[in-house]
Image 1 (tube, one colour):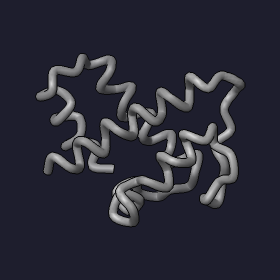
Image 2: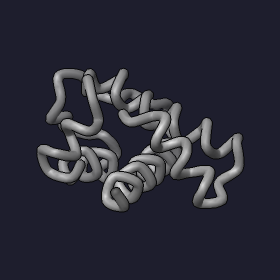
Image 3: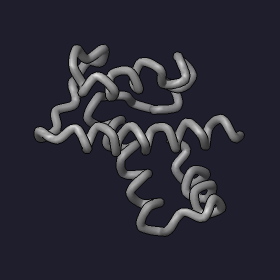
Image 4: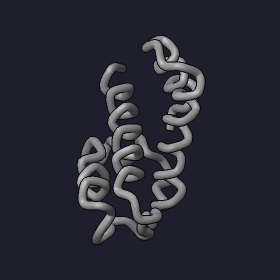
Length: 94
């Protein structure tokens, strides 16, 4: 992840410091939990379409070496998906 550039982009987009930290940590969480070593590689592969589909399905049938196990609520999947979409917007703006 291009963390420093992403943080700067978020700040310039008017995102609060707290939300900036939340977005960054959520994208890092996806990288760590799914063993995606760099989310930028996933973006290069298919613009994160596979990952978005996985999150939309409630993380069933993982196409990754690990699966994302979250406690019951689907709200957490939505939050992670939103953070990923924000990161994709950042990548597309460059």
